[in-house]
Length: 102
Image (cartoon, rainbow, N blue to C red; front, side, top):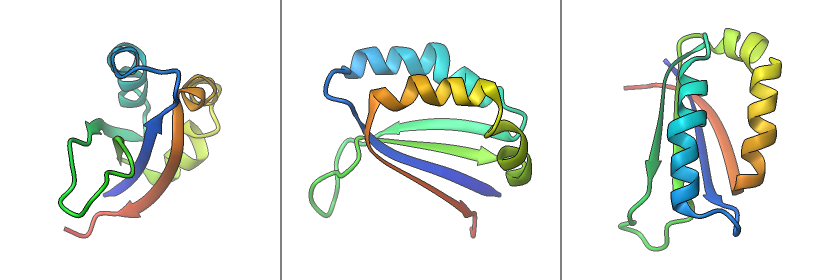
């Protein structure tokens, strides 16, 4: 199964409380509602065994269909509106896509 992994920190003017409320009310339900997304989860990093935590948040989208995500959901107005609202809340964003091996 394909996954999109989004690693990021919060913008300086966004508190964890504000952001987590936004995720529960808007972001999570929106991403879970996309036809190509089987499941969305957000993990807040609590620490690291190897030093500093480079990203406080890691979002994982489990894709039911990478082609549908790329061809339908990604270019949709709904997703573009979400990105326009979400991007100012995030900093140090790194987005990866890959396939599950195990």
